[in-house]
Length: 335
Image (cartoon, rainbow, N blue to C red; front, side, top):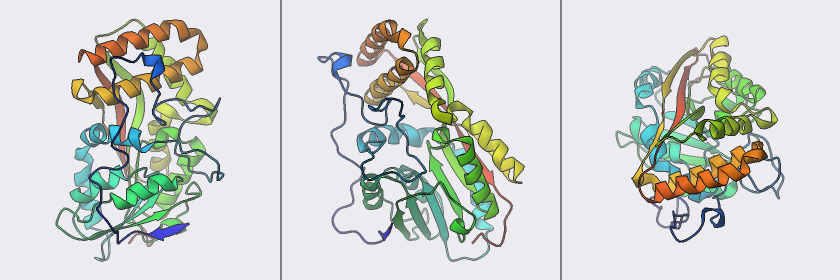
């Protein structure tokens, strides 16, 4: 399904999604507060919350809630590796043709990548937003940026459906492929498909905020490492790559002749991000317990203590991610 969103009626919201997001509530026990969908394990046994690159049935529930994506948008923007933008700008400036950039954003959610990147690139841009959830696509379209760094026009269209079968032909005319927090919820086969499509089309790819499998909490707790190991195992369920995704992606692009650059892009969460930290904690611990039920009793006490420290402004968390820029060899398929 495809629809054009270059003209919108009504006011474009400054931020996507409902304004009421879950908060750290000192009067409510942690176990009584829900986890925003996308911040932790899904309610259906054995299924992880993920923006899948495959078609879904009409009754398939969305994996990410706008509230969760809104909570993380600020820390995501602060974490993304701006150092990768100069080599990307050089490549884009040297593309043949001057009609403007065509950018495909895979698993776009509410469009945070476009809001971050469009204003950092010069020239007219047409963003093609891909996601399986029409609700998120709506927010992405209405909250999309309208101008580039130099004031040039930015237009948007949305596409829903199966983008896991990407081919070089599907990316014909593309200047850039982007994605955020996506690689770690893919399989090896899906990453190979993505790399083959981008390199086959001669199209660079900027793939940000892939989990690295490392977390630092201050003050430290003896259970930190055990929870982290269980969470990482949960991330690898069902053949998904989790913290191994960046390494696999580097290999997949490099084997196809692309030049690959990596840069760290950690979340650094303190008292100002307490709402996000609390939701992340619930999801992180919940996934660990789902993977290793024997942790349940100790993990519940651990979570209570961590949430109390979060409410008091005493907890700091660093969640490590990696950003990847793959510069494929230009071909006739690049615009």
